[in-house]
Structure formats: C-alpha cells, structure tokens
Length: 219
Image (cartoon, rainbow, N blue to C red; front, top):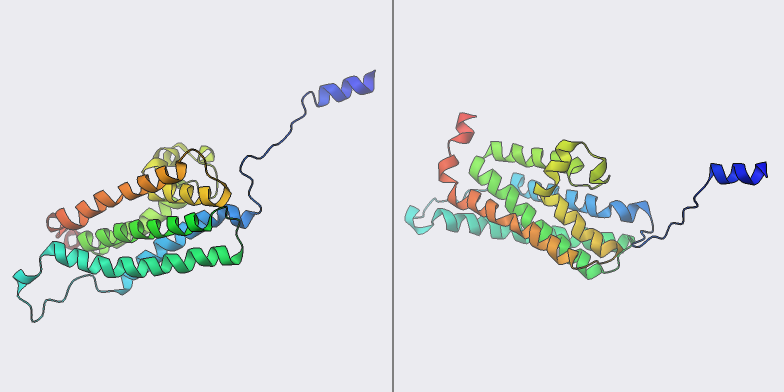
C-alpha cells in the first residue's frame, strides 16, 4: 500500500516524551539563574556601598588585626546578604514559581548569598578597584558559563571547560533541585561544592591580602 508505506518511511519511529522532572513554565525554569544573578549583584552592591576598611581613628593599631578587621566587616555584609537572600527567595516563592521544596529553595539562596558576598568582598579587600572589576568580570563569565539559560552542552568549548570552576554552576543546580525535584543527593553535593569556594576566598582576603596590596596601585 503506497500510503501506508510512505507513512512508515516518513515517520518510522514514534517518539513518546515522558518528563521525569517536569517544570510548569518558563519562569520557574529560569528562576534559579536569575535568583543567583540577583544574589551576586546584591552582594556586589553591598561591597560597593559600604566602607570596607575599618576606621582606626582613636584606636591603637595593635588592637585590631587585619584578620579581625576582615571578619568583622564581613559579618556585617554577610548579615545584610542573608536579608537579601530571604527577601529574594521568599519573594520568588510568593510570586508562584514551581517549587517542590520552598524551604530547600530558601536555604540554597542563603548559602549562595553567604558565599557570593564572601567572594566579592575578598576580591575587593585584597585588590581594591581591580578586585571589584574582577567581580563584574566573573558575573559576566557566569551568565553563559554556568548553564543558567541554555544547556552547557550547547555552549562553546571555552565555557564548557569553565563551567565546573564557576560558583553559579553549583548554586543554580542546587536551586533546580528544589524547583523540579531531588535526585540522588545532588542538592547537598552542589551546596557543599559551592561552600568549597569560600576557602580560596578566605585565603585571598586574609592570607594573601598584604602581598596583593600594591596590585591596585600598579594597575
């Protein structure tokens, strides 16, 4: 039968789609990316607005060590960053994004804000204006490199190689677990991987700070 033969040749296989972690709408699908972007920019604004160095007028220089000054200012910025994370993530849920676990979504946002503020703050303290510029460069690289809007497999090789070294990669993946469904402990693994970025940030802001003091003036 020419009709049935032509139909079989034209469509030899019938595809059946069975979504495993369905997402209700586009807004819910991109909410993890834009929430991470908002938390990074929020942390950057905090670093840009607040004075990063501790006032030493009227104090004996020996009374406050560089490490104490670093953590003292960071605690203020981190606290404000947590307020930002709560407002942003609770706002997402209140606006009606799909979320299988709102508590996990908010927790992920708070961890992300903690790490992002620390990274931007450490860069700004250690490298001054150069560090702030690097904070902007990092967010530019993370927009295509962290698989926030498009699958990383669709990106050029440069961004595919860069992806595992970007904090956004793990922050976005953790939030996606809370949005669409959990799988095999990936939520915890992504948060732990994100927290690992705090270690080099601390080393930069506390240990390497003195050695990098002249980089800004040199630039």
